[in-house]
Image 1: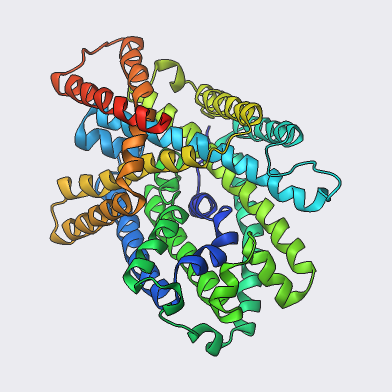
Image 2 (image 1 turned 90 degrees about the vertical axis):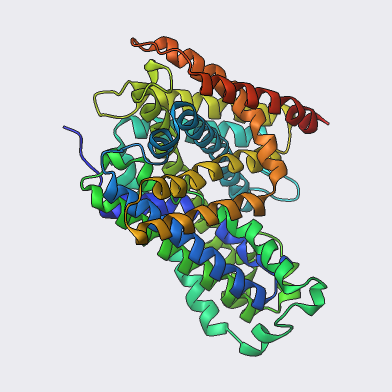
Length: 460
């Protein structure tokens, strides 16, 4: 019998997937574009928006506990088979590319301990030694998840607690070192030469990505011991992450003046720790970064493997990906995910390319499913309060798409196009093969037409 996930394991899954590598560079990232005044406004907008999204997910788990596939089944149930498939395809592709980035970051952080001016062993995570190490880690995690999602989630819980130790230490030391005069120096960012509202928008481009992973518990809701824990875990993790992000960014500006903080090398938290506790500060943060990213990678592997399984169960992905092993792990889906990650790692090494643009475009694909969560709640809500939550989540979803730039959304069509072939093939693999509807054919045609200029722009 399959062991189910409890509240602590679900909360750790969401929190770990959100608290990855970004938090360690957050002080410099924010100081570069915003003053303390803009930061306070930016986090207020983000906080309200992400809470609307989290509460929308909580409400949906109560209204429709039968929809086990989370954001995929919400999109499918509310807006049809093809929209549901696009939601699953976009989410899975984003998870694969995110996992590649996590593996690269782990070995880039390890270079802090191994590399010298004379020896470049792991470098920026794209040397052959890094790729070999990343591949070993990839397949260790693969076989760990094959032993059962419960086992992997238990290890992730320990990793989440471990990553909170250096973050907690940083927050305590920063609170002690905090100087209100340093914090209020150029409070409105006149030196930046940018209006406060423009600074706020620039913070949005950063806060946009730090909450990706909020849907973690909803994605694995079929494995939850108690369906009510799914919504609770989401809300608990969002409030915890928001608290960490707020304290890390605001306290940092009271330790070092904003212009100086903006010039720090990333992960900037390491430089701040050196100021507060000496040379050991760098070691603490580098170790924390490695543990944090490994935990986030494990969370995202669980979520990435779950989506093709759910989609295949609902006949949106080829039937083979609905297979589970004796431990109830999504085996076929996991092989698909990790072979894709392995191929991407090899491509990075062969081309030596910067895949940040691809990561940004893929991340855009996760924002559409977020918007559809709010839209689905708005569609099925009967209570006025639920409708208000749905409207709030929709507005936040639209704001995310606007803040990240319509250009990236258009470019993401290039990644949706190959998925259409998978959708058409999936229909053939299921016994009750259903012909494509007229509306689906029209949407496929529209996506293919949009893919032509998008591909030209990407290549150009």
